[in-house]
Image (cartoon, rainbow, N blue to C red):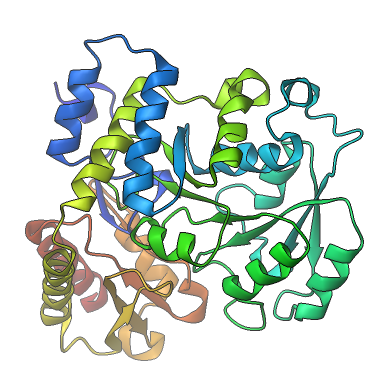
Length: 370
């Protein structure tokens, strides 16, 4: 079946990376085969989630874990877990937080919009987000002050390139401050699956990452952390989490993806991504007004991206107009254009084949030559 032809959909060349708006990752064959097998069977979901918790523990170094519908739901359910603990009556009470600690602290520079505001994900649990500091400055004393004010259920920290890159308190110090006040730390690490162990080792009580980004699985969220809090996260399925529950395809997919990751040769994977980035630079070399460079992942994940800086006077296009021109047509080419207004874009090679890289580079040359 040709899905694109049947439903009149454009083909997409993904030069943007692991993005929800592009329907997640290409699911690896090894993971897809396991998910396909699961579709023919029934499971006791509680037992399946317990098995998933064991896999998540081995992969992350956490005590245990569970699978949610996605990272966004994982954030909301993790916040809810810190409000209710393992008290079913409180689970049923949400989103009414009367009688509970209800404040969730977050540095203002971490108040990102990942497709929806993270502060909304916090409010969905019934919690009250407290934004600390300014976008580019949150002194540790501000965090101490808010912790001392009382009624704090959790601190949320975001590990993402979307956060302010300067002037905020790093995770290790946030953990130290929060734990000193007896408050757990939740980490939104949606695209940080390569860093799960690092985030757990930093002392985070709950971390949430996406199964359908670099883990290359079906849509799902992986929550790892303290056993008591993971049990409280899962208990939310009997309350506000009922509409955020993960099905067998999400749970089995996450398990298969984590098993694959634990046996993967990461240095070889990194070398392959570096080779593809090199192809881009080789094929775009010599275009007037186009500056080429390589930027490592800003959060320290083991890959880089090709950066294209546009001089509109020499190239005849701005970063934004090049982005728009590449997106026009079938197939549409979707670039990583978060910084287009600053004069540059990225071509992310991870989801592209060599043939697609050649096609994209030809289109760039055609557009800029005109």
